[in-house]
Image 1 (cartoon, rainbow, N blue to C red):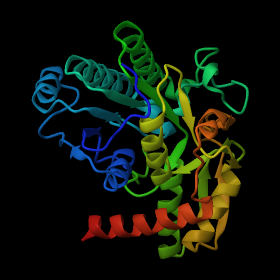
Image 2 (image 1 turned 30 degrees about the vertical axis):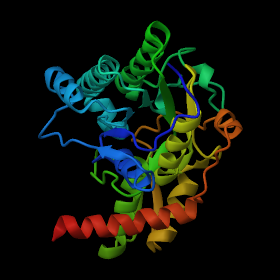
Image 3 (image 1 turned 60 degrees about the vertical axis):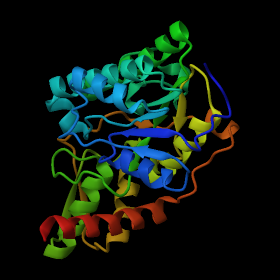
Length: 318
Protein backbone atom coordinates (compact mmCIF):
# COMPACT_ATOMS: atom_id res chain seq x y z
CA UNK A 1 0.00 0.00 0.00
CA UNK A 2 0.97 3.64 -0.44
CA UNK A 3 3.53 4.94 1.98
CA UNK A 4 5.16 8.38 1.91
CA UNK A 5 7.84 9.30 2.39
CA UNK A 6 9.02 6.20 0.51
CA UNK A 7 12.49 5.16 1.63
CA UNK A 8 14.82 4.21 -1.25
CA UNK A 9 17.78 3.49 1.00
CA UNK A 10 18.79 -0.16 1.00
CA UNK A 11 16.22 -1.08 -1.68
CA UNK A 12 16.65 -3.04 -4.89
CA UNK A 13 15.79 -0.49 -7.59
CA UNK A 14 15.17 -1.57 -11.19
CA UNK A 15 15.63 0.98 -13.98
CA UNK A 16 13.90 -0.43 -17.08
CA UNK A 17 15.45 1.14 -20.17
CA UNK A 18 18.79 2.04 -18.57
CA UNK A 19 20.51 2.40 -21.96
CA UNK A 20 18.12 5.10 -23.11
CA UNK A 21 18.51 8.81 -22.45
CA UNK A 22 16.03 8.85 -19.52
CA UNK A 23 17.15 5.54 -18.03
CA UNK A 24 20.78 6.60 -18.23
CA UNK A 25 20.00 9.82 -16.36
CA UNK A 26 18.13 7.84 -13.68
CA UNK A 27 21.14 5.54 -13.27
CA UNK A 28 23.43 8.59 -12.86
CA UNK A 29 21.09 10.12 -10.29
CA UNK A 30 20.64 6.87 -8.32
CA UNK A 31 24.43 6.63 -7.89
CA UNK A 32 24.08 9.16 -5.06
CA UNK A 33 21.36 7.08 -3.34
CA UNK A 34 22.18 4.07 -1.17
CA UNK A 35 20.40 1.50 -3.37
CA UNK A 36 21.12 -1.81 -5.06
CA UNK A 37 20.72 -0.85 -8.71
CA UNK A 38 19.22 -3.45 -11.02
CA UNK A 39 19.49 -3.19 -14.81
CA UNK A 40 19.22 -5.77 -17.57
CA UNK A 41 20.34 -5.61 -21.20
CA UNK A 42 17.85 -6.33 -23.98
CA UNK A 43 20.05 -9.23 -25.11
CA UNK A 44 19.37 -10.88 -21.73
CA UNK A 45 15.73 -9.90 -21.20
CA UNK A 46 13.65 -8.37 -23.97
CA UNK A 47 10.92 -6.42 -22.18
CA UNK A 48 8.55 -7.31 -25.04
CA UNK A 49 8.88 -11.00 -24.07
CA UNK A 50 6.29 -11.66 -21.37
CA UNK A 51 7.72 -14.97 -20.17
CA UNK A 52 11.25 -13.55 -19.91
CA UNK A 53 10.05 -10.47 -18.02
CA UNK A 54 7.95 -12.49 -15.56
CA UNK A 55 10.85 -14.89 -14.95
CA UNK A 56 13.33 -12.03 -14.37
CA UNK A 57 11.04 -10.23 -11.91
CA UNK A 58 10.40 -13.48 -10.01
CA UNK A 59 14.16 -14.01 -9.60
CA UNK A 60 15.19 -10.42 -8.82
CA UNK A 61 12.07 -9.13 -6.99
CA UNK A 62 12.88 -5.41 -7.14
CA UNK A 63 11.42 -3.21 -4.40
CA UNK A 64 11.11 -0.17 -6.67
CA UNK A 65 10.75 0.13 -10.45
CA UNK A 66 11.35 3.09 -12.76
CA UNK A 67 9.63 2.15 -16.03
CA UNK A 68 11.58 4.30 -18.49
CA UNK A 69 11.84 1.74 -21.30
CA UNK A 70 10.03 2.84 -24.45
CA UNK A 71 10.33 3.00 -28.21
CA UNK A 72 10.70 6.73 -28.87
CA UNK A 73 11.38 9.07 -31.77
CA UNK A 74 10.55 12.38 -33.39
CA UNK A 75 7.57 13.34 -35.56
CA UNK A 76 8.70 11.39 -38.64
CA UNK A 77 9.49 8.19 -36.71
CA UNK A 78 6.20 8.38 -34.81
CA UNK A 79 4.23 8.91 -37.99
CA UNK A 80 5.88 6.23 -40.14
CA UNK A 81 6.55 3.44 -37.59
CA UNK A 82 2.99 3.57 -36.21
CA UNK A 83 2.53 -0.17 -35.66
CA UNK A 84 5.90 -0.54 -33.91
CA UNK A 85 5.23 2.44 -31.65
CA UNK A 86 1.85 1.20 -30.42
CA UNK A 87 2.77 -2.48 -30.14
CA UNK A 88 6.14 -2.18 -28.44
CA UNK A 89 5.10 0.48 -25.95
CA UNK A 90 1.86 -1.32 -25.03
CA UNK A 91 3.53 -4.67 -24.47
CA UNK A 92 6.50 -3.32 -22.48
CA UNK A 93 4.18 -1.41 -20.13
CA UNK A 94 1.82 -4.36 -19.70
CA UNK A 95 4.62 -6.85 -19.00
CA UNK A 96 6.56 -4.70 -16.53
CA UNK A 97 3.58 -3.33 -14.59
CA UNK A 98 1.97 -6.75 -14.16
CA UNK A 99 5.28 -8.40 -13.26
CA UNK A 100 5.95 -5.70 -10.64
CA UNK A 101 2.52 -6.35 -9.13
CA UNK A 102 2.92 -10.14 -9.18
CA UNK A 103 6.27 -9.98 -7.44
CA UNK A 104 5.40 -7.53 -4.68
CA UNK A 105 7.15 -4.37 -5.87
CA UNK A 106 6.63 -1.70 -3.21
CA UNK A 107 6.61 1.18 -5.70
CA UNK A 108 6.58 1.72 -9.46
CA UNK A 109 6.89 4.88 -11.51
CA UNK A 110 5.61 4.87 -15.08
CA UNK A 111 7.08 7.56 -17.33
CA UNK A 112 4.62 8.78 -19.90
CA UNK A 113 4.98 11.60 -22.41
CA UNK A 114 3.41 15.00 -22.89
CA UNK A 115 2.02 13.79 -26.24
CA UNK A 116 -0.78 12.09 -24.25
CA UNK A 117 -2.57 15.44 -24.11
CA UNK A 118 -5.10 16.50 -26.77
CA UNK A 119 -3.65 18.40 -29.73
CA UNK A 120 -5.69 21.53 -29.01
CA UNK A 121 -5.90 21.31 -25.20
CA UNK A 122 -5.74 24.60 -23.31
CA UNK A 123 -2.19 25.77 -22.53
CA UNK A 124 -0.39 25.24 -20.27
CA UNK A 125 -1.36 21.56 -20.28
CA UNK A 126 -2.92 20.45 -17.01
CA UNK A 127 -2.85 16.84 -15.91
CA UNK A 128 -6.66 16.62 -15.98
CA UNK A 129 -6.81 17.48 -19.70
CA UNK A 130 -5.88 13.91 -20.71
CA UNK A 131 -8.67 12.26 -22.76
CA UNK A 132 -10.61 15.51 -23.19
CA UNK A 133 -10.08 15.77 -26.97
CA UNK A 134 -8.44 14.27 -30.09
CA UNK A 135 -4.71 13.58 -30.07
CA UNK A 136 -2.08 14.94 -32.47
CA UNK A 137 -2.47 12.46 -35.34
CA UNK A 138 1.27 12.07 -36.12
CA UNK A 139 2.03 10.45 -32.74
CA UNK A 140 -1.38 9.03 -31.84
CA UNK A 141 -0.22 5.36 -31.66
CA UNK A 142 2.58 6.24 -29.21
CA UNK A 143 0.27 8.48 -27.18
CA UNK A 144 -2.41 5.78 -26.93
CA UNK A 145 0.18 3.24 -25.71
CA UNK A 146 1.31 5.72 -23.04
CA UNK A 147 -2.29 6.49 -22.01
CA UNK A 148 -2.86 2.73 -21.66
CA UNK A 149 0.16 2.53 -19.34
CA UNK A 150 -1.20 5.38 -17.21
CA UNK A 151 -4.61 3.72 -17.02
CA UNK A 152 -2.95 0.43 -16.09
CA UNK A 153 -1.14 2.14 -13.21
CA UNK A 154 -4.47 3.65 -12.08
CA UNK A 155 -6.20 0.26 -12.31
CA UNK A 156 -3.59 -1.64 -10.29
CA UNK A 157 -3.65 1.15 -7.74
CA UNK A 158 -7.43 1.07 -7.34
CA UNK A 159 -7.90 -2.72 -7.48
CA UNK A 160 -4.84 -3.91 -5.56
CA UNK A 161 -3.73 -0.83 -3.63
CA UNK A 162 -0.40 -0.90 -5.47
CA UNK A 163 1.76 2.18 -4.87
CA UNK A 164 2.17 2.80 -8.60
CA UNK A 165 2.45 6.37 -9.92
CA UNK A 166 2.72 8.08 -13.33
CA UNK A 167 4.72 11.13 -14.39
CA UNK A 168 4.60 13.09 -17.65
CA UNK A 169 7.93 14.56 -18.83
CA UNK A 170 8.03 17.38 -21.36
CA UNK A 171 10.46 17.38 -24.33
CA UNK A 172 13.82 16.10 -23.10
CA UNK A 173 17.41 16.46 -24.22
CA UNK A 174 20.88 15.64 -22.94
CA UNK A 175 23.47 12.84 -22.79
CA UNK A 176 22.44 9.59 -24.45
CA UNK A 177 20.03 11.18 -26.92
CA UNK A 178 19.34 9.63 -30.33
CA UNK A 179 20.97 11.60 -33.15
CA UNK A 180 19.48 9.63 -36.07
CA UNK A 181 19.04 12.04 -39.04
CA UNK A 182 15.37 11.04 -39.59
CA UNK A 183 14.16 9.53 -36.32
CA UNK A 184 15.55 11.86 -33.65
CA UNK A 185 13.79 14.47 -31.53
CA UNK A 186 14.17 18.15 -32.40
CA UNK A 187 17.01 18.96 -29.94
CA UNK A 188 19.30 16.12 -31.03
CA UNK A 189 18.41 16.70 -34.69
CA UNK A 190 19.38 20.37 -34.50
CA UNK A 191 22.59 19.76 -32.55
CA UNK A 192 23.69 17.24 -35.18
CA UNK A 193 22.59 19.36 -38.14
CA UNK A 194 24.28 22.57 -36.93
CA UNK A 195 27.46 20.72 -35.95
CA UNK A 196 27.75 19.01 -39.34
CA UNK A 197 27.02 22.30 -41.12
CA UNK A 198 29.73 24.06 -39.07
CA UNK A 199 32.30 21.34 -39.86
CA UNK A 200 31.40 21.30 -43.57
CA UNK A 201 31.13 25.09 -43.88
CA UNK A 202 27.54 24.81 -45.16
CA UNK A 203 26.11 28.31 -45.66
CA UNK A 204 22.51 27.44 -44.77
CA UNK A 205 20.69 24.98 -42.52
CA UNK A 206 17.05 24.05 -43.09
CA UNK A 207 14.99 23.41 -39.97
CA UNK A 208 11.90 21.21 -40.33
CA UNK A 209 8.52 22.97 -40.16
CA UNK A 210 7.72 26.67 -40.02
CA UNK A 211 9.64 27.49 -36.82
CA UNK A 212 6.48 28.87 -35.17
CA UNK A 213 5.43 26.00 -32.82
CA UNK A 214 6.27 26.62 -29.18
CA UNK A 215 8.00 23.89 -27.17
CA UNK A 216 9.24 23.39 -23.64
CA UNK A 217 12.58 21.65 -23.10
CA UNK A 218 13.92 19.95 -19.97
CA UNK A 219 17.48 18.75 -19.40
CA UNK A 220 17.29 15.01 -18.78
CA UNK A 221 19.30 15.05 -15.53
CA UNK A 222 16.74 17.50 -14.13
CA UNK A 223 14.03 15.00 -15.06
CA UNK A 224 15.89 12.22 -13.21
CA UNK A 225 16.15 14.39 -10.11
CA UNK A 226 12.41 15.15 -10.25
CA UNK A 227 11.64 11.43 -10.62
CA UNK A 228 13.68 10.53 -7.51
CA UNK A 229 11.99 13.37 -5.60
CA UNK A 230 8.52 12.14 -6.57
CA UNK A 231 9.37 8.48 -5.96
CA UNK A 232 10.20 9.40 -2.37
CA UNK A 233 7.44 11.94 -1.69
CA UNK A 234 4.45 11.32 -3.98
CA UNK A 235 1.70 8.71 -3.81
CA UNK A 236 -1.49 9.34 -5.77
CA UNK A 237 -3.38 8.06 -8.78
CA UNK A 238 -3.14 11.52 -10.36
CA UNK A 239 -0.44 12.22 -12.93
CA UNK A 240 2.35 14.70 -12.31
CA UNK A 241 3.77 16.82 -15.14
CA UNK A 242 7.55 17.32 -15.14
CA UNK A 243 8.89 20.33 -17.00
CA UNK A 244 10.22 23.85 -16.66
CA UNK A 245 6.94 25.70 -17.11
CA UNK A 246 8.56 27.86 -19.83
CA UNK A 247 8.43 27.52 -23.62
CA UNK A 248 10.18 28.94 -26.70
CA UNK A 249 9.48 28.91 -30.45
CA UNK A 250 11.38 26.38 -32.56
CA UNK A 251 12.93 29.33 -34.44
CA UNK A 252 14.19 30.90 -31.20
CA UNK A 253 15.37 27.51 -30.01
CA UNK A 254 17.23 26.84 -33.28
CA UNK A 255 19.11 30.11 -32.79
CA UNK A 256 20.14 29.08 -29.24
CA UNK A 257 21.46 25.74 -30.53
CA UNK A 258 23.28 27.35 -33.46
CA UNK A 259 24.96 29.83 -31.12
CA UNK A 260 26.06 27.10 -28.69
CA UNK A 261 27.39 24.91 -31.51
CA UNK A 262 29.11 27.88 -33.11
CA UNK A 263 27.26 27.81 -36.44
CA UNK A 264 27.00 31.29 -37.95
CA UNK A 265 25.30 30.52 -41.29
CA UNK A 266 21.72 31.17 -42.36
CA UNK A 267 18.77 29.31 -40.77
CA UNK A 268 15.75 28.68 -43.03
CA UNK A 269 12.55 26.65 -42.59
CA UNK A 270 11.14 23.72 -44.56
CA UNK A 271 7.38 24.20 -44.32
CA UNK A 272 6.76 20.95 -46.24
CA UNK A 273 7.73 19.11 -43.04
CA UNK A 274 5.08 18.74 -40.31
CA UNK A 275 4.97 21.16 -37.38
CA UNK A 276 3.07 18.91 -34.97
CA UNK A 277 1.14 20.50 -32.13
CA UNK A 278 1.13 24.35 -32.25
CA UNK A 279 2.15 24.66 -28.60
CA UNK A 280 3.14 22.20 -25.91
CA UNK A 281 3.74 23.73 -22.49
CA UNK A 282 3.12 21.82 -19.27
CA UNK A 283 1.43 23.21 -16.19
CA UNK A 284 3.99 22.25 -13.53
CA UNK A 285 2.18 23.72 -10.52
CA UNK A 286 1.43 20.26 -9.05
CA UNK A 287 5.15 19.46 -9.11
CA UNK A 288 6.10 22.89 -7.75
CA UNK A 289 3.73 22.38 -4.80
CA UNK A 290 5.75 19.27 -4.00
CA UNK A 291 8.89 21.35 -3.67
CA UNK A 292 10.72 20.72 -6.96
CA UNK A 293 11.78 23.05 -9.77
CA UNK A 294 14.12 22.56 -12.74
CA UNK A 295 17.61 23.93 -12.13
CA UNK A 296 19.38 23.78 -15.52
CA UNK A 297 18.87 26.78 -17.80
CA UNK A 298 18.25 26.13 -21.50
CA UNK A 299 21.58 27.67 -22.49
CA UNK A 300 23.54 25.65 -19.92
CA UNK A 301 21.64 22.48 -20.82
CA UNK A 302 22.33 22.84 -24.55
CA UNK A 303 26.03 23.37 -23.79
CA UNK A 304 26.06 20.14 -21.77
CA UNK A 305 24.10 18.31 -24.48
CA UNK A 306 26.51 19.49 -27.18
CA UNK A 307 29.51 18.34 -25.13
CA UNK A 308 27.80 14.95 -24.72
CA UNK A 309 27.10 14.79 -28.48
CA UNK A 310 30.78 15.46 -29.25
CA UNK A 311 31.85 12.71 -26.80
CA UNK A 312 29.28 10.19 -28.06
CA UNK A 313 29.87 11.07 -31.72
CA UNK A 314 33.63 10.66 -31.28
CA UNK A 315 33.13 7.23 -29.69
CA UNK A 316 30.78 6.19 -32.49
CA UNK A 317 33.28 7.13 -35.21
CA UNK A 318 36.41 5.68 -33.57
